[in-house]
Length: 433
Ligand SMILES: Cc1ncc(COP(=O)(O)O)c(C=O)c1O
Image (tube, rainbow, N blue to C red):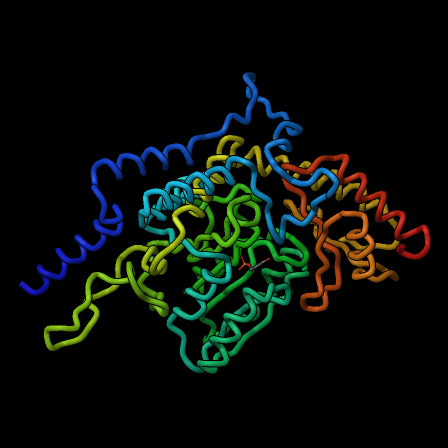
């Protein structure tokens, strides 16, 4: 009886939130219309199926006087994404309506080969990493393996957990070639090892790690395998059906070119039960009771969305749906191919230059290319570029001391040539000024 009441109360609550407590039928119809609009594919291919990349560039409001080669930090959105956000904000605020942010879940799931129940919406990569790092069942003395190429976003959550629960952290060298990484990893795994938590594509050297081979090792040793996918979604042909990991945290504000402050966490179905919800609230539970003498939570929702709690921005996630539609209009392989083509254009020129060392391996590359200087100073070069409105990223993390260049579909070979000339000028024409 009591359970029945609560279950029906929950359904009513969800229903209420879904439709904002307003006249259901008409409002719901409009929202579905809106979802269809934001997910509609923009016409980015020509009649013959080819893509005109110059036209694609025009879809972006990016300043023409600026050469933006730092998508690894932040991905500028095309007009269709900005419009979806704005139109949605307009509707939300004229109708004073509530809810509906799950509009992004299906497009993301569909695009990346997941079940919608395996996707939690987040605000960034760090959110997703924390859900896993704080939620896995780990005890004093357990070991986890991260790497020497971490971003603070994948370093601190694991170090925080290690500090709280007295776990041992082992550090894998991800600057080694693939075979040595795999050998080193196997050597590091011991009876106390529980987790491998690595960047799919480190923010430092930008290599694509041999994730499936690592996944196999994790499976063979019964370890949890988490990937920090900050640079996976939207850069490479990412597919959770074939990727051998349990958990994957990504964002939609970098390579997916979506609204800033949006992301998602993939939790493979079989891995959901292992994550204790730490941050909880609306949508985490299957019911709770404070008024019948036994205060308690009945249980956790059986969907990854139990980790998306409380009110979210429908408008930003409308933008995420639009970002997926934008990518989908070109196709995952089309996007990944163009990114790689531009990276090749850069890489092959950098390879010829004296005075720098490429640290991104030629055969494990996608949209990032990083290098260090033999003599010169990477921070000085960063400033040198900035003065010329060329935006790249310096990489002080873990004393890598490199320059990182990202190429995305809105870039052109001409922009890359200008960057290379600027580098030559800095390297060979005396002081950087
Ligand atoms: C590899 C990697 N992990 C995590 C993050 C953190 O991402 P976010 O700021 O979306 O939390 C970044 C950001 O650049 C990153 O490059």
